[in-house]
Image (cartoon, rainbow, N blue to C red; front, side, top):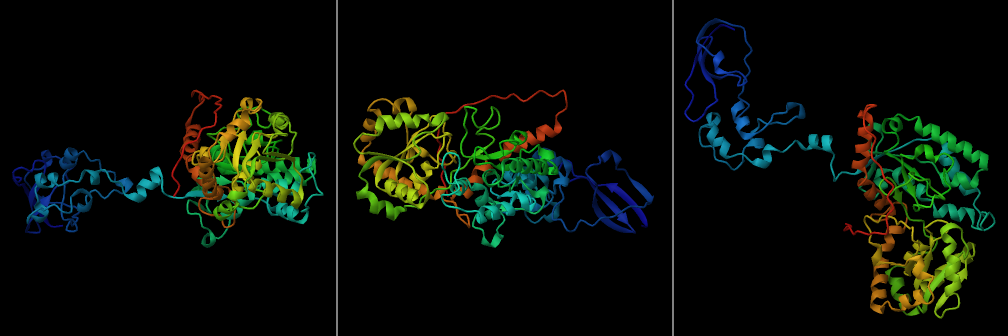
Amino acid sequence: MGGYSSNVEKQPSGCNGLMYVTAQVNGRDMQAMLDTSMTNNFVAQREGNYSMMVVPLDDFDLILGIEFFVKAKVTLMPYFEIKALKDKFLINEHCDLGNDGPHVYLRQVDVCIYEEDVTRFDQQTHQRLYGDPNSPIRVYVYNMPRKFTYDLLWLFRNSYKDTFNLTSNGSPVHRLIEQHSIDYWLWVDLIAPESERLLKNVVRVVRQEDADLFYIPFFTTISFFLLEKQQCKALYREALKWVTDQPAWKRSEGRDHILPIHHPWSFKSVRRYMKNAIWLLPDMDSTGNWYKPGQVSLEKDLILPYVPNVDLCDAKCISETESKRSILLFFRGRLKRNAGGKIRAKLVAELSRAEGVVIEEGTAGNSGKAAAQDGMRRSIFCLNPAGDTPSSARLFDAIVSGCIPVIVSDELELPFEGILDYRKIALFVSSSDAVQSGWLLKFLKGVSPSQTREMRRNLAQYSRHFLYSSPAQPLGPEDLVWRMMAGKLINIKLHTRRTQRVVKESRSICSCDCRRANFSSSIHLS
């Protein structure tokens, strides 16, 4: 560069903080603005030859000084890619700046600031830092060896029997597996081509670093019932090692991993080593018969409905069967159960000879299914007592049959109760009340016909929330799983990040064992 000389030019009145100089570059007079991170203490009359970089600023309509941003209480963060010097970010697009062009005075600009624009982040940067509450959950599905997935499905298919292969209590093994097949329905939706999927609140990602959650596609119920005992335990140990060796598991200690163990015996021999994961459960037995203290909680885990064993009675069916519902209270199932299910024997003794009540021992196979379906469609109320566990598949059979459930299970936790209000479709009765002589029948007879009609209309609307399908339907159980999961993500990240940063002197997290009664809160579904 050739000769350079400069003089401090008097600033326009009312524009404190701006620094102009009259500069002569190669004999040409110019108006130049100094870098405003400097002060005018460094500006003096100078002449001579200097080497410097000249950057044209004609791509800006306006140059703002540091004092402007101090006054506007704005912090520039170029590493967040905030384009703070663009007029659309800081200046009201309807503001008239007159004809001064780039020489507009600060006082004029200051009046025209949009407060919301000053605090607006670039949307992409904001989502990267804080997440987008409206974006789908990103799930990485582990590509586990075939022996944990496809081989077990083939075993189930090739060994399918109706009533010949029974469990120790007489239940058909394959039908029992189907009742707990939530692992299959979630997995088959996640791995389907995106063009064939209907759910928009969850997407499968191919890179682990992009995932919010990790799905473990291990069919624990099939392996429990169809493999030899020692073979099953060996496979459980292999699955445990395979999953816990994954870098993503080690990074979060499993907190962002989803483990489907819907049958209470599933994965029982090793699941204590995966207690940080999100367990998909049929209920939360708090007696210690199935789950040890501290293993399950409403905050960490998720309750999913059983797969119904009867056909759907839709709104048309409910209307057509309205006049045929002559049975006051219906129950068909095992009359003797262990643990909390002992209430069944007491209820049978109390109700078996009452007028308007049908109580039958359940039978397996297609004939048993037909008898249960027919009885539910001819009944106003369906009795749902606890079984070996607080929950029973019978509850969801009643719901899809349009039969109002009467739930007698003090320890029961229900699926998706953060979304669904079960008081609209079911009656809840304590065990101590239900076994009192005459109490339950008097209570049911006191429910008005208008109330039962309203509850049956609600059942017609709620049934969709308990019907698994492929492709998974909006507002179906698969959809509600991910809606519930979305509410857990913040807490998962809290505990994961806290674990990653604590040192050995850090305090332990305070914990408590919370036992909650039935509680429903309604959230609008759309």
